[in-house]
Image (cartoon, rainbow, N blue to C red; front, side):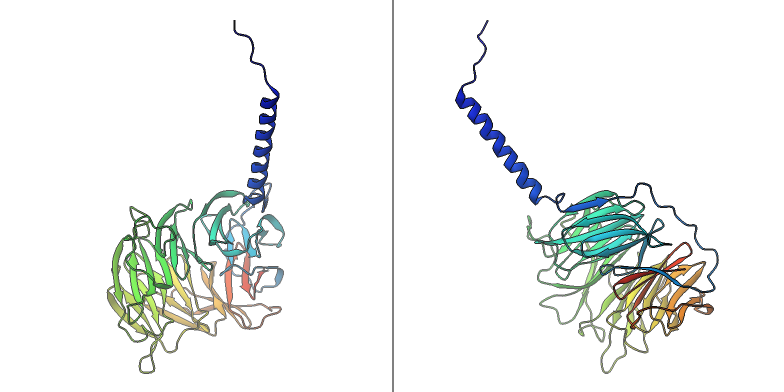
Length: 405
C-alpha cells in the first residue's frame, strides 16, 4: 500500500495564495456586477386587478401623485400604476398611490414601457442605453434581462407582439422574452460588414405593427428622408430583410420633422410637414413603401405630438386636437378640438383631456357623450397622457403621474 501523500509547507502557502486570489476575484466581480447596484423589493402578493369600469364617472378628483420623469406615456398594467424616476421603477396601487413594489439600480433610466403584464426598463451605462430588465407588473419580480450596445438616448414602444428600441443611429426589435429579433443601423461589432443595407444614416422615426417595421431615416447620399419597411423578425437578426425602401419625393420630405404615425400589416402612415407651397399631410403607403393616398391637414402637428393605439384604432394628438384614424385605411375619421393630450378608453368611450376636465367621446363619430369635470393642480399647459385602471383615470404630465377617481 502506498504511503499517504504528505503536504509540505510550500503546498500550504500555495493553497492559501489561491484562496486569496479567488476571494479577491470574487470581491472584484461583486463590486462591479449589476447585482451590487440593484435593489429589488417585490410585492409579497400579486396586485388585485379592479374590474373594468362599466360606466363613466360624474366627476374626478386628484387622489395622489408620484414623480415620473421617465415614462413617455401613462403606464398601467395588472391593476398597477407604473412610474420611473431616476434609477427607480415603482409599482403603485392605482387607487391609493401606495407603493406595492420597487426595482432600483445605481444607473439612470433611459426609457420605460409596458406590455403583456410586464414592465420593460432600460438603463444607461457606458455603452449607452444598453441594459434592459423585464419585471412582472403585478409584483415587480425580475423576469429576464438583456444587454447590448445602444445609443445614449432611446425610445421604447410596443405593438402587441414586439418591443422596439430606437435611437438616432441604431434600433433593435425584441420578442416578449427580450430576445433580439432584429438590429438595424450602426453595429458595434459587425461580424459581416455587408449585412446592413446602408451606413451612416440617422434614424428619425420608427414604429412597428403586425408583420412590418417602418423606419424613416436620413442617409448621407439621399436628397430627402427615406422610408424603409422591414421584417421585424428575419431569419438572421443581424441581417435586415427589406420589403421596400424609397427616398420620399412628396412636399415636406426634406423638411426634417416628418415621422412615422402608424403601421399595420398592409398600411403605413407618415406625417409630412409640407412646405410654404404645400400643406402638411398624412401620407399613406402600402406594405412595400409604395405611395397609396394623401390626406391633407389644416395645420401642422406639434413636435410634442403623440400617437396612441387603443384596440385596433389609432389616435394622433397634434398638440391641440386629437385625430382618429381608420383602423383599416389610416384615413382620418374625425377630429376633437381643444385637446390637451393623448386619449384613453373607458366604458366604451374615448377619454380626451380638456381644459375643464375630461371629454368622453363616441369612438365612431367623435361626438361628445359626457364632460367629466376635473380640477388639476400645478398644471402649466404641458401635454397630458391618459391611462385607465378600473375606475381610476391616470394622468401623466409635467414629470408626475396623478391618480384621479
